[in-house]
Length: 264
Ligand SMILES: Nc1nc2c(ncn2[C@@H]2O[C@H](COP(=O)(O)OP(=O)(O)O)[C@@H](O)[C@H]2O)c(=O)[nH]1
Ligand SMILES: [Mg+2]
Image 1 (cartoon, helix red, strand yellow):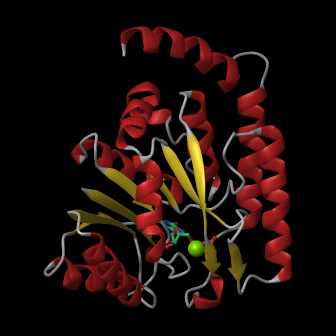
Image 2: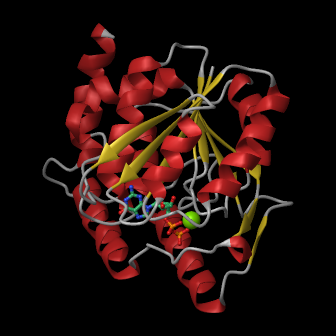
């Protein structure tokens, strides 16, 4: 089964077209699928739209009564996916703002089936790119990716901040049983959770790959919910937590992992 995870916060304008495209893509792949969307306290028509679709397609809604932010939303989506998935399923997560085209799903599936634990849809692989991103945002994103590749180098990854990725459920189940509530620890810090997930999966030995992908920011109709100041603060906090010489993640989890792997 293919499990599609979507975080949604006030996405009434982009959801209908995104779900229509997703249905067409998934029908062509000919595998069972389930879409799980977390409506994170939207104040627009997101919930009504989702309820309508859930009557005709396999779509499950997790509803937060109030807006809890991307970190808690992603935690809930991944914990749900870990609970209902079996080992030969594939988990795919992307944005609901119609900038992540579903057409990459089959490439992601093939790459996971060839033995990778995590595969990113990457703007920085040959053949990838981005449309409609302004110079300021493009510069910030390049700087953020350079920062991440220096402080958290991961073999196989060039695009650290794109949330469009596929995962082998085995690695997600392992991460949740190893980290428990700390798999996504930096919950109030904007989009930091997208990087945190990569780093936490690297610590437990995940194998990473990428496929080329074109970001369609030119199709974005909703406003961006990325608050760059909070996310930047999050990256700094995470760098300190990871590299802190007295019990930082890098050393702490290495020791814990040895004991865990002996039992796992
Ligand atoms: N659940 C939840 N999702 C959010 C929140 N903020 C953004 N999102 C979702 O996360 C994804 C990324 O946000 P988006 O505005 O696309 O950021 P950008 O593409 O980086 O400008 C979209 O699917 C949003 O609906 C939030 O506070 N809660
Ligand atoms: Mg987006």
